[in-house]
Amino acid sequence: MNTPVWMTVKLPDDEMVRHRIGPLTIFFKKIFNDIWITSSRDESLTGEPAELPAETDWIRTALPEEFRDFELTPVFPDRPVVVNSEFAYRVIKGARSRVYCRIPVFVRITPLNMPELIVAEIPTIILSNTWFGIFTEGELAYALSSTARRVLQKELFEPHLVVCPIEIQNQSDQELRFEKICLRVDRLSIYIKAHEMWADQTLITHHGKEGYSDIEMKGSIPVEAKKGGKLLTRPRTPIKKSFTVRTFKLLREINVPGI
Image 1 (cartoon, rainbow, N blue to C red):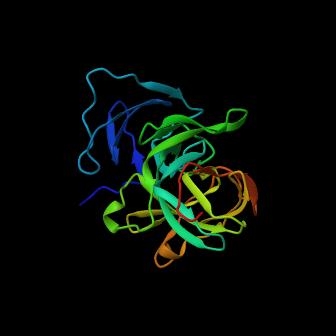
Image 2 (cartoon, helix red, strand yellow):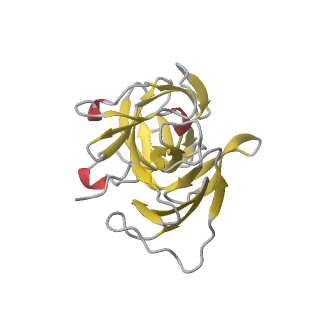
Image 3 (cartoon, one colour):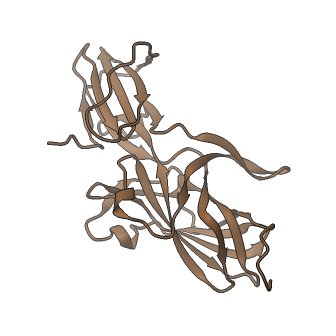
C-alpha cells in the first residue's frame, strides 16, 4: 500500500522518521519539545524515501509544548513565479487562450490542528532567483524551468506539482506577443483530486499597457477538478477581487509577415 503524500506524521521520541514528497525526502526527529528537521533531494519522484546523507545539517526548533503529530501540507512558493511559454506566443486582439503551468510546492510543517504554528516550509525543488520587470521597476521572483502548456496530458502530473489553469484574454487594440508569464501564486488555493493537485483559475485580461494586465483569481475549484476535487490549502495572501500588475514579458523582436 502506497503511503499518502500529504499526511500527518507521528514522531516517536528519539527515532528518525523519513517521508518522501516527489524528489524531496524530509527527515524528522523529536526530542522532548524539540523537533529536528533536515532534507535531501534526488531524481526519484515516488517510492521509498532516500537515506539520510552522510553529512547533513539538522535544523532544531524548540516548540512551546511537546507535540507528537505533525501535518504536512502543500503551499505555493513565497514569491511570484516566472514561467516560460512553451513557444513564443501570440494572442490576437479579442482572442482568449487557456494555458496550464505546473508549479512546485513548498512543504509546510505544522503541529496537528495548529496551522498557525509553522515549524518549517521546505521547497520540493530549489528554484532559481530572477528579476521580473524593467531596470527601474520590478520584483524579485522565482524562475521556473518548465513551461506553460496549451495541452496538459495525464502523465505530466507529479506528486510535488500543482497545475495552474490560466485564462488569457486580449482586450487591447493590438495583438499580445509574449515569452514569459509572471504568476502571483501567493493568492492561489490548492485543491486535490485523487492524486492530482490543482489551483483555482487565474484570469488575465490584457489591455495593452506595457505588459500590465488585470488579474483575477476565481477563488474556486477549476472546472477540470470539480468532480471529486476538494480544497487542500488556502492562499498565503487573501484574495482580492482583482488587481493590476506587470504580467507578461513581451516579445518585440519577432517579425511576422504583413504586421
